[in-house]
Length: 184
Image (cartoon, rainbow, N blue to C red; front, side):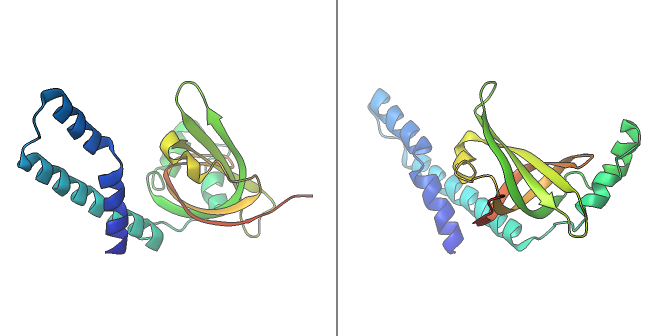
């Protein structure tokens, strides 16, 4: 219930819907019908329930795959693009949880106000580092922009691309932030 309330109050106080209703009231000189107010209340409750469910689903790791990053990126090494697509298809659009250190956080202007994030993943028993990169829309940039290079993070995201030594993720959620590691 707590997470539902947290999501719902953001939607209700976010201002977008209420601003439209207020502007409509000012322009027309009439208050919106009571049914509109109830519809807004109901719609935001449904959206908040979905957002709270999604957040809990991600935090609990339901529906996630457990794979070795080294193995799935190695499957595309030295093969044709067509064969690589066939080999990686079972992993695409699956959720994965990864822990690594921030390598780069940068704004991309233009074409769109988004943040590009690169995280280095160290696979146990491997001499290599693997990169995970993803884009974050500007309204979620505040989660990532204060993170310094070397900060340990745990992420959850959907795999949308697999290349040699690299995973591309979408719908990324920042699950936890650890200590900053300074390389010397």
